[in-house]
Image 1 (cartoon, rainbow, N blue to C red):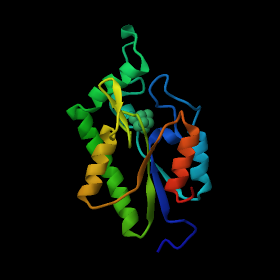
Image 2: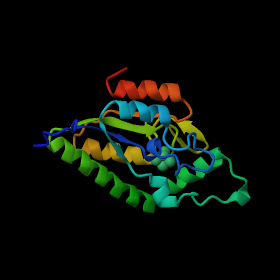
Image 3: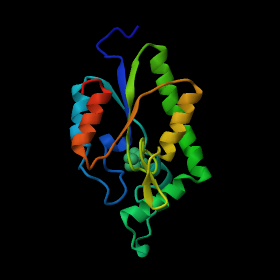
Length: 183
Ligand code: SF4
């Protein structure tokens, strides 16, 4: 079964790696994809699964910013971290997590290789190694990746996860290649 041209290899990526448009205002570093990282993924001949953007789905494209408060990226990330920890947000994230875990389980059931998952370090939501809350960056995953990791652990599914930052293209490429076993 599935003995056609497909590689049976997939990588899961945070939404904004392939589409910078839903980024928080002033946080998009590219017109479209995180180009150098996307090029590495495209060149690897693997399927790229774009996970949803939880902040966009919960807070909207503008994240509900109040420009009257003279916000900075840091103050907005701090506010967003609080919002994304609300119960309603966690309900949304739980549903998103279940959809992702379902896909992973289906792929694995049929012998596909989940090469790994790439998130966005420093994000309150999709950080893997670092996240943002309380006015600073912390060495722990963001709320969405934390919930995803818990669910995967519950099901004894082990997926390699790595976090990149769009502003550091060189490191992002290095980490992506390493995840793909090519660096
Ligand atoms: S890091 Fe996550 S929440 Fe932030 S823009 Fe990217 S996909 Fe959306």
